[in-house]
Length: 200
Image (cartoon, rainbow, N blue to C red; front, top):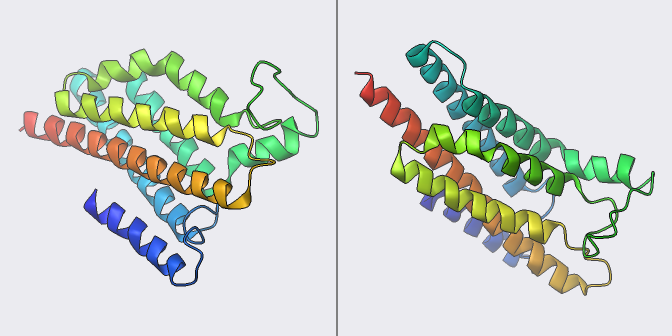
């Protein structure tokens, strides 16, 4: 946690030195973006390790761990290759896909909202595999709360908003996104460690 926050502050200070505090934080190809992709890849690895450990223990494939593994694969690819942005620009916007009920959302920017809805529908299976470890469960609840905030902020239509305000809003969005990723990784590590020590 402290290492990640130190990296975040370092990128911010480098940007501040150039009078652009957001420069190394909010852009898709920013240094922080690569670091976040690394965190999500680490989540993939620990989700897979937990999946294999649970499979060895029970003799069957856990649907909850499979969801987590596949989910973090998608999130890693999305962070690295901007999948939901490409979905918006290449599919939703050109086909004028609009949901009038979501009036605050930028036209076509439904990728993360759809992913969040899918995640909420599948969350009972996920919580089932993390609930036996209280600290991991609490970290997961915290990460889910931060993730929901990030999706909500990311969905806001920024067109017409003053540029400095846009950058500040996106900056705080990245803070919450990074915190969620750290919480997920810590939870997965705690689960793998507790499973490993329990099998000794």
